[in-house]
Length: 291
Figure 1 (cartoon, one colour):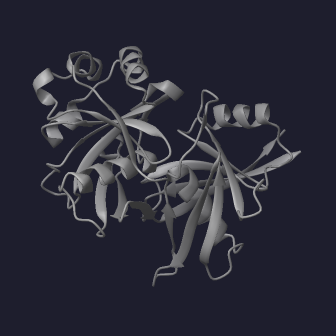
Figure 2 (spheres, rainbow, N blue to C red; figure 1 turned 60 degrees about the horizontal axis):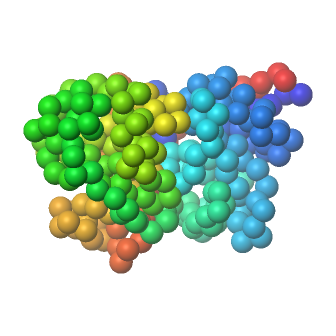
Figure 3 (cartoon, helix red, strand yellow; figure 1 turned 30 degrees about the vertical axis):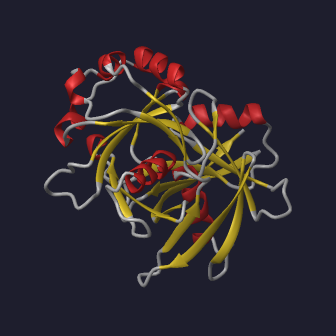
């Protein structure tokens, strides 16, 4: 059996930037073990499979796996890349409002077209929830390879579909200097009830117009570093709005991926508690697996 696949650079306006996603459409013939094996084969941070919905309200159901076989949830670059492909493939007509099924969540999606003919996707995430804080930053700082004084406040676990530890640092230079010990960081994340770690600063580099500058690490599911993480950008934007560091109802731009040579800009709007992430991308490749 030949299994078609596509590569999409998400949160990008040109090829070979943003966060790459492997996508397998029409994946219903594949069992879960095969999906996990394909995700290991591609070795991207996530591989997404489009399958038939189990909820009649949904237009599409998405399943996403990391290279170590972990299934991940939440509406991030894994979902955005899938909807960008659906738009480019002509399956969504002229765009409009749709519904996606991810795990137990049923979430709205909107697809529009820019003036240059490129699709732009906006996705509602689950309501933001902040479940824990880290009072003792010493083990966390050591796991990140930085001094305690580099941590600029109390790290919090935030979720809009996936729980991540949001760690404020004093500067962009401090964010760039992070060099985590995966085993130690995994232990800190487990103790706090978080899946991944989003280090950030509101002191973005001088050449960036972003509201926050960030990097993401997730040893829990085998991701060394991710170039653009929508499921972390969502709760971070909600935290910034909650604390008055960003305006409600206006796009909060988060820059990520510079350290990987894949700069990404993630736009998140938080309005009356609703967290909406938006962005575009580019289909960079296609092929078929011979299984």
